[in-house]
Length: 553
Image (tube, rainbow, N blue to C red; front, side, top):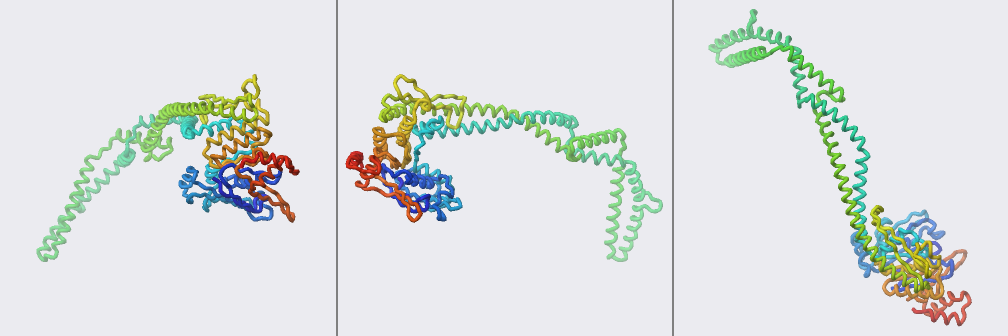
């Protein structure tokens, strides 16, 4: 419940501090006094858009704060807890707007983005403006009103979530389908490239092996000659083979060792050197014996090496990387094949998601149709009370599975007949301005009873209504005020007299400055204000008597 509203330097308000009570509060005042200013200021605390023009001329900033009691608002308490903004059983929303147009929002003293302020504000207050009935002509608003009355949020959420899943899969499928032509062209190229490389069948590390063997065979004659020269020096040289010289040196070292044992190490080293030379000679001989200069094998190696170099150039890679490139192309081709399988799989998923969405939408539609019948009767009864005794109102709900949206597959149309013998037609084609206003007000009051918002504001929703009809409207709002806090800005005494309390808006000009004030009225003052609304500036005994009859509070 809204308990207090403080306004500083907002529009033509210098300072206001208002206390509000439960029940219905009537707000009246002369035309142009600024009856809706408090509502506009409160809207800032609910996250409405603001600009520098809202700041009172000469002031550096405007500031509005609203204090709410949360004992009967569990949804708001839970929201504050979830966002770590709770403050006992109260909630204070504050908004400042600088003369430069910049604004700041606070919840319980904590700076917050406007999105959070709006989210919380929706749980605290519902505002019905004087032109709300014009919005009722739009099909989407009619759907919203029906859903508000039905209060089937879980069905709406389930339907919306199912729709979002459907759209997500649909987008993925669309992206795959759009790139399908590119994938087909790429797949054809890959198939040709991979088949060519498969046919060549280059093994891992084969290029390095071929390159090494080719180099050896290409230099075969030089290898044989070098090996032979080396063996000659080691074993067969007439000038003195290394092995012979080492044997002679070893004999001399052994003779020297007999003279002096300290020279034993020299003999050992010469012996080791002799063994190394003999082993080197044997290794060279073995290598020379198996070295074959096969021209056919060399030609085959050269041909394969040439093919490797040609394929590497064709694929714009180094020859040593050709094997890995072949594996990468094969992997890409495999993935493209899996994309085709994925395309079929996603198409099946999309159809499954569509069926799931239609199932949720059908449940939602059934709920709408059930509550539409219930609302039909209540609105028809309401418009009978509002001086349309022969009127009839129905809500036509049509389910169309081809018309998918987050809100389901329904089209909703408010239909009405105001006179006997006339067929039901869309409300925009049948109702006059006054009739539309009465129908809209009836729907707003009825739907307001079903919404969990603890405070409802009706800002001159009774425009176009007068006489006995206005009295009925006043009683409807007073009855609503028994269970919900209602603030009603009105110009009708029949409505204002039904308030549990009454506030008067006054505008005064002093020293070239205009200020608006709002004050609560006692019983006597209320009678005078109702008399003013009845008779204008001239208040007579008759208007005072009529005012007393109208006053219920």
